[in-house]
Image (cartoon, rainbow over all chains, first blue to last red; front, side):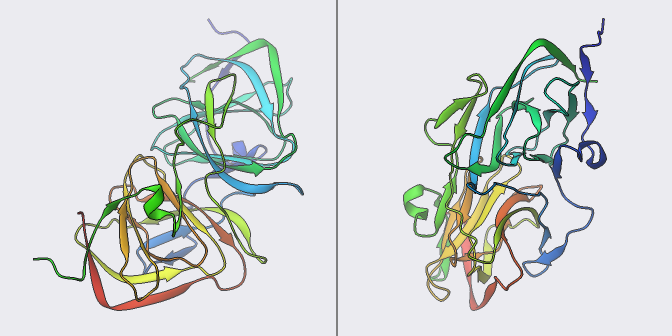
Amino acid sequence: MTTNHDIFCEALTRSGFAPYGDIIELKNVPDKLINSGKCGRHHDLATLDFGIDGRAGISIFKSELCRFPYQLTLLERHPEGTQAFVPMAWSQFLVIVAPEKDSRPRAFLTKPGQGVNFHRGVWHGVLTPLTEPGLFLVVDRIGDTPNLEEFHLSTPWRVLAG
Amino acid sequence: MTTNHDIFCEALTRSGFAPYGDIIELKNVPDKLINSGKCGRHHDLATLDFGIDGRAGISIFKSELCRFPYQLTLLERHPEGTQAFVPMAWSQFLVIVAPEKDSRPRAFLTKPGQGVNFHRGVWHGVLTPLTEPGLFLVVDRIGDTPNLEEFHLSTPWRVLAG
């Protein structure tokens, strides 16, 4: 039985995700062929923003897996910078975002070869890989000042595969 | 029959690769547990440097595969910035670097879960994935000024699996 606290996954598409961030994926055609024509460069796929006090950094996150139905109990956001996640395996993951912390979230299911870059300040769920190894390359803000707000939901949302 | 123009692959290790760049991989222990303890953050794994006129950008490269023995005929370098490559699949790739453009190159074979970040100005071979899909997340300099030097080798090096 479903309730109005159920959220069904949508496919991750550029138009659906645009208010929340960028999809990091191949374009239809590369911007440039390099390496004597052997390699296509799909150029500058995310709007990066690390504020005045921050700088870009590359990290790896290793996360526990999630399973459907997924109980969403925590949202977070980073007021000082964008945050990009790209799986280090050819795998799908779940991406949850919310227009406001107390509004109805949306859940997107990626395809292999897709990553996301959350705009600065966008409320999102924590990392939710569906398959091993649960490793993500992360490009986000490195800085000394606080950059995390968390919001614990009093009533969890139940995210279903759709 | 091997010749003195053969190069045998080495495993990619921190000490071996240090003169050329950073290895992007999990640390032995994460710097921080996040997401209510469900996720380990392995923090700030590469020294990024995009010069005065550049900025960080995220791109995807899709490259043809290479096979052993690999004929190395081209080296390149980027005088204005570092360049990081991380496979978007759980796969190995070949990394070739050279102390100088006319010196003996070194070839490293990665393990799944490893990427590299070439220091600014380091001579390296073009992207050489060994397995499909040949996709790499790239973090490098976005800028308007030239940032590529190529060197065509008059005598190719032959790179062997080792």
